[in-house]
Structures are given as C-alpha cells and as structure tokens.
Image 1: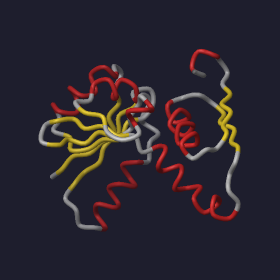
Image 2: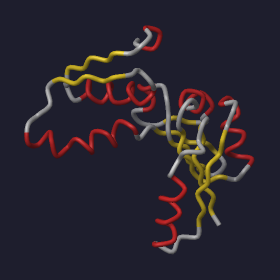
Image 3: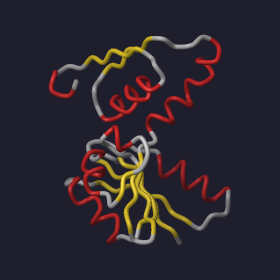
Image 4: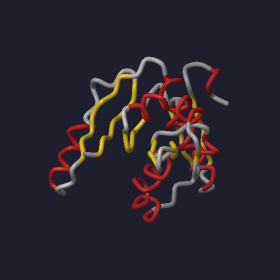
Length: 153
C-alpha cells in the first residue's frame, strides 16, 4: 500500500486525509493518506524517506525547509523558493509548488469574463509569494500587504 501524508505544524485540523482517502476508496487505489505533525522542518526529507512515503503535501511552516531539503526542485518552485509537494521518485525527493498554478486555475473563469489587471494580497506567507509571482508572470499589477515588513520582500 502506498503512503501519502500532509506535513505541518499544526496539522491536526487538516481535512486532507478524509478527502484523499475517500478519493482512493472511490477509485479503488490501494493507498493511505495521513497527517504528520512535524516540529522541526529541517527533518522533513529524512522523515519522508524513513517512512517510505510516496508523496506529501507540505503546509505551514515547512514550505521553505522542504524547498531547502529536496533533492531536486522543479517548475515555478525554483522562483518561489518554497514548495508544497514532495514526490518520492526512486528514493529521490522531488519538490514542486502547486499553489500558484492552482490559484490561477481557480480564477481562470473570471479572467475569461473580465481580465484581472490589479490584485491585492493580504499576508506575505509562502502562498502569497507563489501567487504574487504567478500574477507577475500574468502581467497583473500586484500589491502585497502584511502586518510586519520582514516578509514583504
């Protein structure tokens, strides 16, 4: 049985296991998705490999540690500097960021009706960075505001 998980701190509130396990059951895929509370993000690759996990979602506060510990980072994640997905590819940890493509897909319908020219992002966490880069690439003028200045860059 293939194992999947979500790494985070906190992670107890996550509904990902219910959603993914229901999908596995519906599709008759012999896999299990679980939650993995991780205190020290610098151990994420070690924990991922030691537990023979095939794929993982990564949430706060571990997206940057996951980026730094991956064997290979692909796609837009290279520009973002943070990842939210790990894949075990023959014992090698491959990392991606699906935040930006997922968000852009979610607003695609609105873009086709009335193109978005400006955007305001509240907060400067990892997802905000991913979305602001996607907006920049789509030529959408973006303003990011945050409670503190240290993450705005």
